[in-house]
Amino acid sequence: MSAHPASPSPKPALLSKRAWVALVGVFVLALLPTGAEVSGTPYAINLATRFLIYGLAAVSLDLVLGYGAMVSFGHAMFFGLGGYVVAIVAHHALEAGPLFGWSGSMQALVVWPLALACCGLLGAVVGYLALRTRGVQFIMITLAFGQLVYIALMSLQVYGGDDGLMMSQRNVLPGLNLDDPVVFYYVCLGLLAAWTFLCARIVGSRFGMVLQALRQSERRAVNLGAAPTPYRLSAFVLSAVGTGLAGVLWANFAGLVTPDMASWTKSGELMAIVILGGVGTLLGPIAGAAVFLGLEQTLAAWTEHWMLVMGPILVIVVLAGRNGLFGRWLGGSHGH
Image (tube, rainbow, N blue to C red; front, side):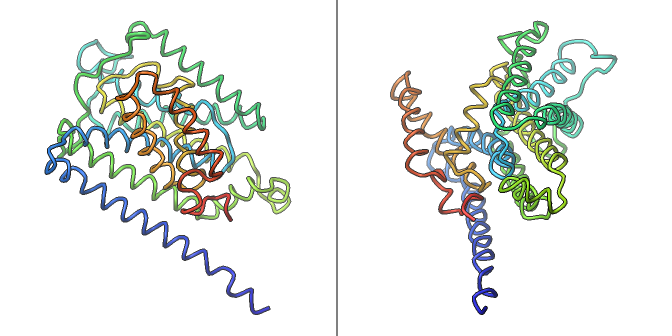
């Protein structure tokens, strides 16, 4: 009997470990621009900004993949949609005429929530239809919707078609100059930290516990009175919004949106990042994004056929460690 009171003790230790990892990570990332300036490598800020944006998308995907066991193979559609909404509104504000009587806007506080609302709406529709199925069918439906969005963006000839759409200047945030790479980097870092914190709170809440219970044994969770679809759909919509936010930041960062942002290969890339970092850890996919993009940069500089090298590396990581590079260390959701 005496063993029972002691059994929950690893849980706080695990949480504190993750909290320490998160705090150290934020601290190191906050110092990165200073380090880049001192070492004379300002291009490192751009590379780190890319990593933060991909990290945001990966955390969002991990919410459904790691905690809800929903293998979405079309998540890049939200990444693409978020970017395109911002770029299209900017296009009408700067160059083209009004859109449905609205002359567009460059204000981030107007355009970004609009883009996130569009992603949330698409997430609700896709999630509602996909969650009527399970397993392979779920994967295929998300893939099919992803391809539909990709083809729709390709067919938007007025917005550049398959060449994409340029965004000649970044959105405007009151009191901040987003055209400054360092300021934009800190905005991305702040949003990633806030979003990861929010996801961690959700995962640790009653909602998150039910979501994980559904993943482990749906029948048992239903017998305890949990309705699966509302929980899974809410998580899916939330994940779509987070991925859309990453797309919004990418449009501002790259100054260009293309249909490739919504392609199935981009969805596969996001999934590879999550698996590489550790499924069901939230922090793992952020580190996975850094490793993935770092490998991509290194291998691309070495050979143009870098994907031939990257593929086997990812396979080895998945085979060698079922929890990815950081899953075991961070205590992935499959670990307890």
